[in-house]
Amino acid sequence: MDTKKASGTAGRKKENFWQNMFKHKGLYLMALPGIIWFVLFKYVPLAGSVIAFMDYDIYKGIGGSKFAGLKHFAHFFKFPEFGQIFRNTAILGAYDVLIVFPIPILLAILMNEVRGAKYKKAVQTAVYVPHFLSWVIIGGIFTTLLSPNTGIINYIRQMMGMDSIYYMASEKHIRGILVIASIWKEMGWSSIVYLAAIAGIDPALYEEDS
Image (cartoon, rainbow, N blue to C red; front, side, top):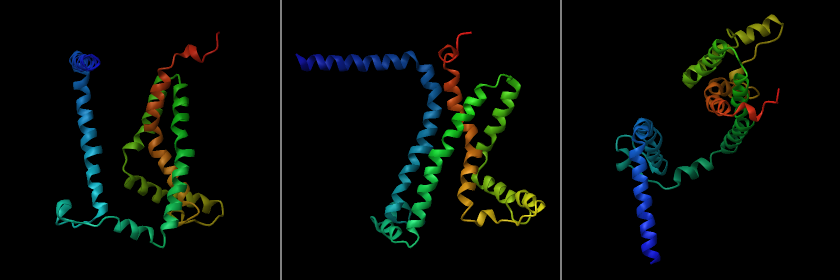
């Protein structure tokens, strides 16, 4: 009896699932292109990660290359600069969590308080645009701005009687530059989700009674 009952319940759930799919077929069809794009460009490329475990030959491809196991990982861990590489990665990851992550939330809160529609749209457009620039372009912009000879930052320093600094080759400054570049590039785009979440909150929940 219990088996038949469980089988009947599973059958009803399956039937309800397909009924729900048919009922909201329009929404599923609208989501289908996004799902296909996500699968093709996010999940399918993960299969290429297998080359890390191979003596990969570009001419033979994945199927023809020899399996190497953890040989390349062992070689990397023995690399003299591995400790420094790991430390730099950990520090940049900490900066990303402690500094880069909260900025879009603060930006979303600030933009939500802007009442002028035209001004708000102008600000949103200005902060969204950098997301669509490649990191190559971002690197070129910062290299130009921070150039020791022609960069505007060092030009201002020279006007103030200070020496030029080669920021892009400075161990002291490069981490900060990477953090600032990451914030500038992604804060506007990342704030979209938080702004949408804030807009969905009933103002009565946080506004004081007048």
